[in-house]
Each structure stands twice: as C-alpha cells, then as structure tokens.
Image (cartoon, rainbow, N blue to C red):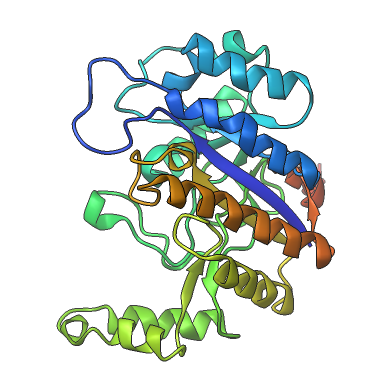
Length: 305
C-alpha cells in the first residue's frame, strides 16, 4: 500500500468575509511540519492557492522545500481570489509546471477536468467519496469510491483505462467491511423525513455505520489508523491523507483553536505516520500515482478497403 499526503496550502482567511488583502502567515508553520515528514520519508504535495503563489515570503518558503526535492508543488484553485488569467503564476513562483490539482471547496466536474487537460495537469484530487456538497452549491460525490482511477476529461466521474488523466480521491471510507452497503444505509437514513430521527448519528455512536476521513482535522489518530487498516483489508492500494495548511495555526480554522490544538494536530499526523511505517505503507508523491495506473492504449481498428 502507498500513502500520499495532500495539503491545501492556502491563505489565512479560511472563513468569514473576504478581505481586500490576503495574508499567508500560516505558511511559516510548514517548515516545522516538513521536518516531521522528513523523518518518515514523506514527500507531501502542497496544493498551492494563487494567494500563496504570489506572496513572496510564502512562495520562498515552499520553493526551498521543493528545491530540496522534499515535496511536490501542485495547484489549488480558489475562484473567488484567482484572477482570470491564462498564464500560470505558479511557474514564476516555483520554477515548475504543476501536474497535480485540487478544486477549491471541491468544486469539480467535467468542465474543470477539460480545463485541467488543456492546462497540462495530469492528476486531480478533488473527489471526496460518499460526500455531497450540494448545500454549498457544490458537487455530489456520494456514489464515488476512494479508489484511484484513470479517466477521460470528457467524463470526469467515470473510469476509463485509456484516459489521459488520473483521479486520486481523498481517502474517505467506512470502518465497516462493506463500503457500498454502509453507504446505502447512510444515504437512506439521511433523506427527509427520516433524517429528522437522526438515525445516522445513532448508528455512528453504535459503531454500525461509521464514515471516516483520513484527515487529522476531523479524525483522531485511532480513527485514521482504523480506516487505513480497513482500506488495507478491503484491497485498496493507495491512501490519501489531506488537510488545510491554515489548520497549522490556531484560530484560522475550526479544527485548531488553541496552541494545545496545534500540538495535538501535529501529534495526530505523527502518530499516523508511525503506524504507516510499521505497517509497511510506503509514501509517494501524488503525481507518481500515475505510474501505478498505466494508461491502456486502445487497439487500432483496421478498416477494410
């Protein structure tokens, strides 16, 4: 099994009113985080927003790690503060063309995929399996699996072995063996008016249907390890841990509100990496997943004369 770590590396203003100027102070916490990754041989993918890429100090911090070949730099689009320009500012900031991408607020569909292909991206990681964002005017991923797949830019949600793009979903799954059955039960109980009974929460507390994220923002170490073990037993070969860089600094996200929360957050990351190393789970960069999913060429059709 392989482990990739994808970090939405973005400005400080994660929620609330949009300011006239975006600050990126949380990026100063990344070198300390990178030291943890270095100890375990992890090359994280910093999916970088426009605000970070054009912030000289933030970009310099990330470029130093990239130049040392200790990470991958990808792109993370926040449409509310990314100018509609054709040139990629990330090339100027980091001296490279990013291959990996994640949509802001997971706003992803076939139109986005077509533009990814046009811009030269090769890997997307915008899909959150078993989760829908329709209440935020976003996509519905409730039927999607956490298994990576190749796809055509003309149909972003369907596997295509000859597709020129690779999707690596965020690792979200169930602690129970049968993911499909657990998902059907969860979705059925979430429909109105049954949802008024709050049966999803009851089943979660009874440990009968437990949806879990491989993310230190919403899962503790024990839950992340349990999810990884379930993924292994179910035959999955890739884990994708994810979180937001502002969660490294107290007060910027709901996940870390104090200095103690900051320490606990890093400890959850460390605890999982200790487990992964002991379990023989090998770290890899996000873009390297392409090598595990070789593109199948379609056979040539001979036309009779």
